[in-house]
Amino acid sequence: MRGRASRIGLTGGIGSGKSTFGALLQKRGAALVDSDQIARQVTGPGGAAIAAIAQRFGPEFVDDTGALDRGRMRELAYSAPDARTALEAIVHPLVSLHSSQQAQAAEDAGTRVIVFDVPLLVESGRWVQRLDAVIVIDCPPAVQIQRVMSRSGLNQSTVEAILAAQSPRNIRRASADIVVHNGDNCTLADLQKMAEQVATRLGL
Image (cartoon, rainbow, N blue to C red; front, side, top):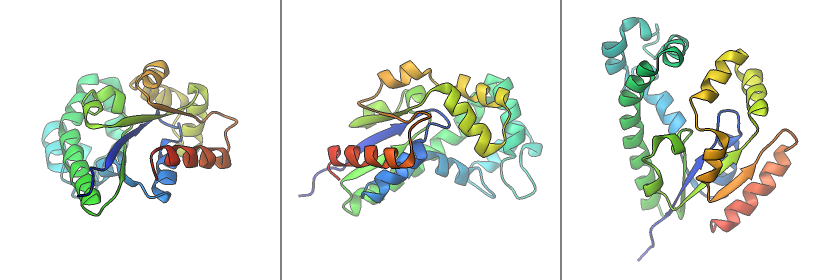
């Protein structure tokens, strides 16, 4: 009888390099369940969350393609915590459902390690009991801000507001079984080497 797959949480603040690290583990044979990608799907054109978003926030929060107007929602969510909570109440159950379905499919296919890429893993409080271990990609806030501004075009105050809504760095690290340091001087080759070490530790 095949044993249960290991379930590993992967998290880190915005701009930490978490998604890159997840992709490196996937190359080593892990199944990757990306909650951000699922959230984009359910809030994309005709996604499962769109009708509820339009009902709760108004049709102006749905763009011409039938997707969530992310810019408008970002402005509202970071200025009004109640709005962010309401959006999460719509999106998170759908993300959880799709995550569970993807994980089950991976386990049925014989995958030994399932990695759940969850940006707000520490903040949610509902993931820890589902996981065998947590990997945190650690990065100084100043580096995060520069990375996000460079890749997204968001201004500094917007990025700082996003960071403020996430767990402090020390709290995130305290939740980790494995900490991967991806600071300003860390190259892609360095990150690949660390991913290899973590993959071996996970049995990949």
